[in-house]
Image 1 (cartoon, rainbow, N blue to C red):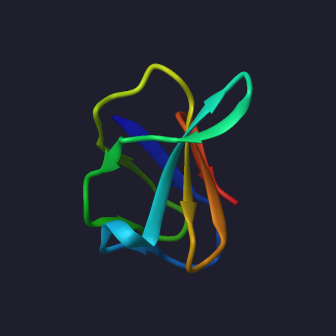
Image 2: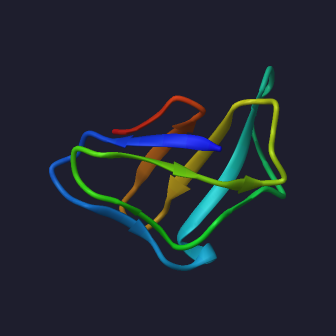
Image 3: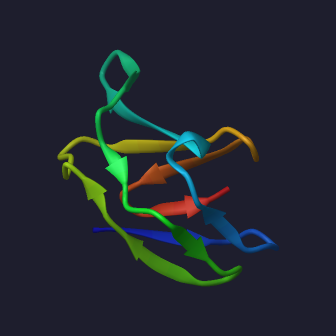
Length: 80
């Protein structure tokens, strides 16, 4: 399980898989991943929630919310 802390001034939600792209951080940079977040995701402003990513990854993951242009670093994620 990964934990997302929403430090933005608005609620954050993901309702469909096409909204986010999951990448793996490697020594060469970010590469596409087969990992999928459990949906839906809802993180109220100022709150922290746990989300499932399958399969679980040992390397650092990055979620890109393409619509809002947010980059979410996992684990220890914070919305920026």
